Image 1 (cartoon, rainbow, N blue to C red):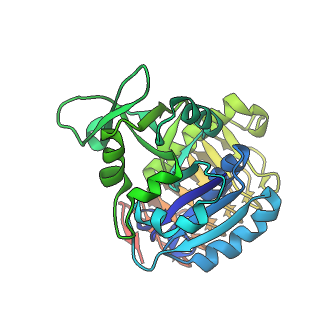
Image 2: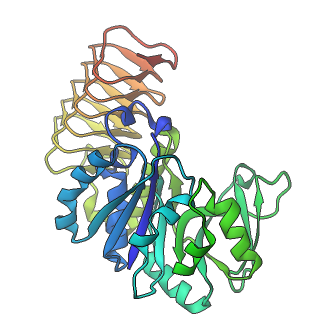
Length: 361
């Protein structure tokens, strides 16, 4: 089986983290976002993954080559010369996706994090015998999304309603699809949307089916949702593999600590924290609802909450970093400095406090 991951553009919503690496390589729960998806695809029997990309393909491929052998899966790129939307990339990668087997192929949006029940999706797809399957998830505020109207008993999709003013349902497209190769005959090689142009036509022919996603779902393409996504992911990990989470008197709630990270005396860490490889957390530090990426040093008695600390950065002694502060790579926050929602570009030194949310160039 094959799969296409829609990697797409520049990751502007996750800047400054994406100024140094393509968005799918930004760490989430101690590994690149895209690796969560590739591992899930491998587990469902996929042997080849095609990345639909229009930004830094060489960087992506050279990085993922080391994982190819490790995971045992073939990874190739299909490069757009112009943005092709969410359907055009399928037409562009047609030759890579179709083979003599005639098997259906997966399509995933690279920003989506979930428990990826892909084996169940394959069974669902075989059982209904339609042309395409999409995963849907229930949300509290459907008016912000395109809502999927479906027949509850069979899962057959009747229609889509874009950002409804009145309540028509609470299930939205979760960005995970399983498509028969015949779907490619419906897509022209031009900028086009699979959600607005392709799926409604398949639904009109009664060949589109939706499976309700069990467990959590989050589009982690922007910082606030990234932090929420981490909480949901760690909650899920607690249920599936609790032994992967840290434990001890200094741990509060769900915390993921890489085996190479060092944590000092008298710290209080959690809930909802991920500490990456080769990090140093000195004594008396308080961490909550945050991600601390590879090679970061948090000095004595610092406090970090609701924030993302980029690779190889430093947070000084008695510093306080909170309210969705995002430090790009190699940022150094001085001793006793306060950051209230600062967004700091890479390779900067912060010597004075940031009292209100702002971008520091």
